[in-house]
Length: 143
Image (cartoon, rainbow, N blue to C red; front, side):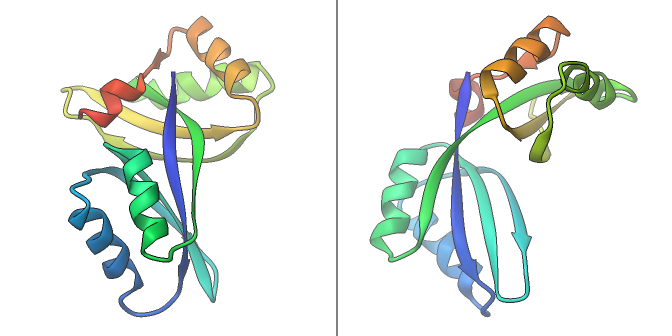
């Protein structure tokens, strides 16, 4: 039920993202989703890829600082209120969200949201109880 996410330390320098993208491409890895959070001097690039373990190794071999983190992926109906319903499940369970990002699924009428929370198991239980679809790693990696 958990998805492996790559978190890559990125210096705020011209060409740095191009370098990372080239390493991933040369390793034959496909990016499914990404998010970047930055400060003045550096950023954290978060990626969901089809082969996370291979991507981690390729990036480390290229001298980059990278780690794998377990996150939750949910599928929500792509209509008004779909996102609100999922967030209400977590709020009702007293769950805080550290960060999230979304991407459109190839499935018509569905959007995917990646969540990082304090307690994955508690969040998964709350989401399931609320009828929210928890996406498997196999499904995400093969999108």
